[in-house]
Image 1 (cartoon, rainbow, N blue to C red):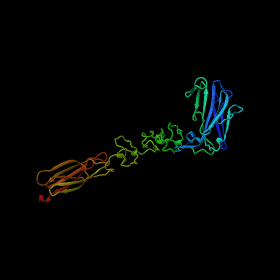
Image 2 (cartoon, one colour):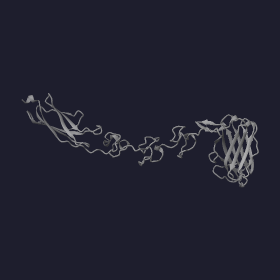
Image 3 (cartoon, rainbow, N blue to C red):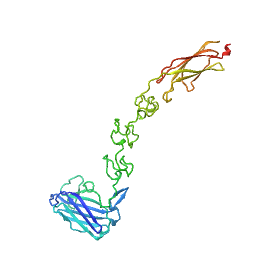
Image 4 (cartoon, rainbow, N blue to C red):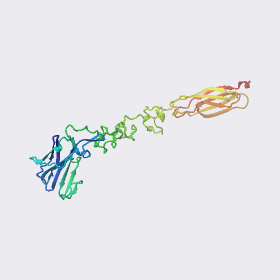
Length: 380
């Protein structure tokens, strides 16, 4: 059956409105099931809603819009129209082109003059005798037939503007179109839009379903270079010491892992091999009460201290000469911050020895030995 290919509308401020409907086929060679086809237009002025321009003129004051209809009914061309606020109708005699494909109607009336019309909203309908031809058809008792109402989005009839009146194109985030084809339209539905004025609906890298940085992980939260689903980049991949993963499987992550040495820029969490340790008896201090304070030192100090903690030392104090009973004390002690240890030795001469027991990052040290005299006056 004849279907509408194009609609042309021209407005003359002197008072003439011309509507032409172009059909794909010759309207005179219609099938028997075709009952009627018509195109209606509303001519009005621009309305701005949320920054978006529309031609929904029916919401404007009554003095600002006109309607016009052209069509065929059982092969007979017809046309009618009206102007808001004008009593009566606009009448005209439509004309058909020689090939039967273009139907034109010119409406002339003083009520149309100086209206400053800017835009047009068209629609179309087709009536078909017999059974419905698609899901959206409806039954019309007036003609005992089914009809299909063609909206501006389904039949190619689009809103259009008279020359010089077209407003700026609506931004992608407020144009009613799913520009990036992700099933979401405009702000705030589309994550690619941060406001109604956004010029692109393209989703941010952290929510676009693509492995943009080639690390085998896609989008937030799987890709740890993305901190939120609105993140704009997936790469380059973060270094091992700041990627929120336990890369070496030791139960420690990033800067808490010894392999990172406390640096977020570190590229490996692999723990360092243990290094040589040195144990020193830094100070042997006899006390007035005939006791002995021993101060030790263990190297190296690895940074950060909270990650590379020290473990225990071994200290032995043995009496080698002097009055009274023999004295010997062997202890395994945690290395404290003060590294000082007290022994109740009594007077005499003593041998002090010790070593560091080692840990995951420091090897066992060599033994250090020194001698010291406690309360020498009591030995005289």
